[in-house]
Image (cartoon, rainbow, N blue to C red):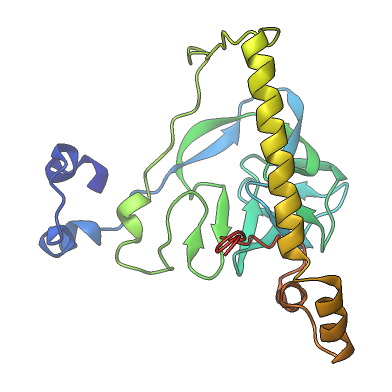
Length: 245
């Protein structure tokens, strides 16, 4: 495990690290243990959610289908990559909530299924999760299939949040006069910012825009909007550059 390498643990990973440890980096990682349902496990209703924001390319299952651990239930598209969303445990599909072409945010439901909690078995199998076409594996890294560096994060795992996590509490008094004064001032600034951004987004005076459109030309932001992927938001930077100059 490269993450347990003495140099890595000491924080002494330099530009020559890969070259010096290439043999160790290219070792075939140990397969994960396969999960199977316990004999006395009870079926539970669970929702499979989108792991990130993206557009649904295809939903591969329908209500009533029976799936096994690791089966692909949908394909999401984001950042020009198609990502297979797989189920961790087997079960029966109760309801499909997403459809092809739909834009989902991270955490949005894809489907509802009835599943049986799984326990680890001694047989080997690959871990269920998210596998991305085009050379990316969800939450694992950006290594292409067969890449010698793919084992780097093969056995890495993120710790689950625990109930002992501290809760940050605010001591702000919203009824305080100073709070109200600052709130009013910041709301005025926010309103002024929105007004200026709207003015910039217009692309100029009404007369200038009218003349531009009469020449059968699109405004700059309209041209950009026409080449964006469906459901993608346009993030414009430095909108107020040279304001007032």
